[in-house]
Length: 142
Picture: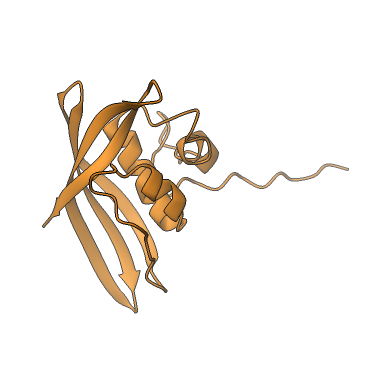
């Protein structure tokens, strides 16, 4: 008797393979979120995408762990009823070896109202316990 294996859920960040197929969460942002201590995001864009996926999954622990200590809030609360609709990375720029920016638009629906969050985020790369990591610092919302 054969059994159908359900497909892996697509990653919320919307990344696709070279063939245009949605990447599974485990092969995309999940590898950074679920294994943060051993496998930090390799660049600011991957960190930003994984942070979006963490917002979709309401993973406050990951969001706080990847927020720079100088700007990190003490805690995070998630608005009830938010339905995340998608992410579009508009620009990714490496300023130097330790600084980068990512411009993105995240769309969501809250209480029946469509919302478009357009942000230019700043990231810094610093070593912690000998392991270099990218950190979200802050962003300008437009």
